[in-house]
Amino acid sequence: LAEFACRGVCVTTAGCGSDAWEAKRANQAAAPAKIDFRSRFFAPRAGLAEDPVTGSAHCLLAPYWALRLGKDPNGAELVGFQASARGGVVKCRLGNGRVMLSGLATTTLEGGIYCG
Image (cartoon, rainbow, N blue to C red; front, top):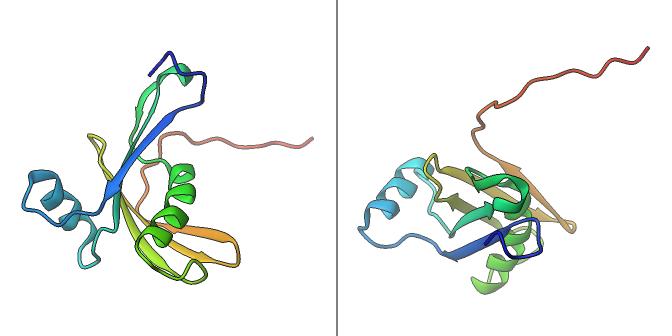
């Protein structure tokens, strides 16, 4: 993947419907919601082997899966599961040409901006 001249590579598949371990993990994390799609994001050229949960990727994936699943792209609500080692559920709501994301977050860096 490091050979590709791009920021990163995102892979995706339909939601979890089986009894596989990953499906159980995703469905437990999202309960009571149903997982509409799964993804992983790799960015070795950016120094990141795999991003645990990528909001920007979900902004592209949500409209794609809304169309694939026959949901109204103006008002659809979908649930994505990023299947990294840490894993994460991202709830996506489409409307007015935008994707609103919500879910639990892990703080990895804090900072401040000073004007003076």
